Length: 281
Image 1: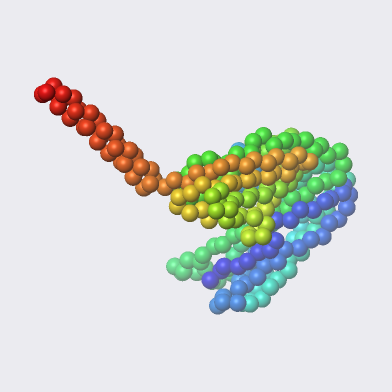
Image 2: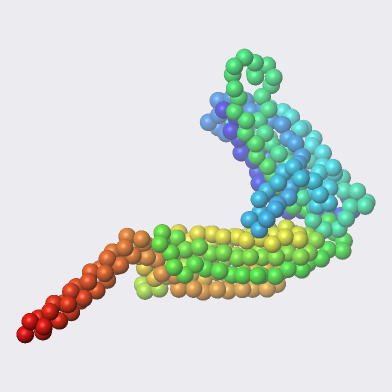
């Protein structure tokens, strides 16, 4: 089995033109593995497209020049079961490096020796990437805003959705911190808070992009009224939205509609019956 773990999945670093930066990633062959893990490390550009941030590991741009600055000390090797290997990399930043964000990823994949790939034996190929978010010092531009802070007010599946749209007009990446809290509006029971769960997370907003982020709030009963709050801290601005969320499952809605329909039908039948009785009299 060629499964493995990779750490960190992303790292943020600061660079200066003309400097040499040294870093590393860690690759582990799990203890339950029964085979040596042969690996290969490549360097690929990293970019995103669309507000949903579809990742692209092939497109080169002026924001992925760093691909040509990185070198790997041991790009191939083997890791025995229950062993961990630190793979070092070096970034040689040129004197002419532009200020602002530079993005690349170290792609680690299984790389079985050719003699093991003979015959009809098919090897499973696994690949994971460690993304490097670099900020080159110089004339960086920090400009962006919180466009929207949204919470779904009515849900049928017990999971409220919170969302936000963030814009970055600058030339380097920015980090938004989002905190979500929720409680039962009737009983006061807390579902999400700093005391009960990790409900604060961070999102990277790439330069010259607009990003839409969304999360689901779990832990709500099938029927109830809740108070959900989302606070967004981004580039010095803070936006807080608190919304009353009604959770009403489809079966209850159908039962409610059926009940109302039955009541209305009964009332109409009584009205018709009384009118007929008056005509007879």
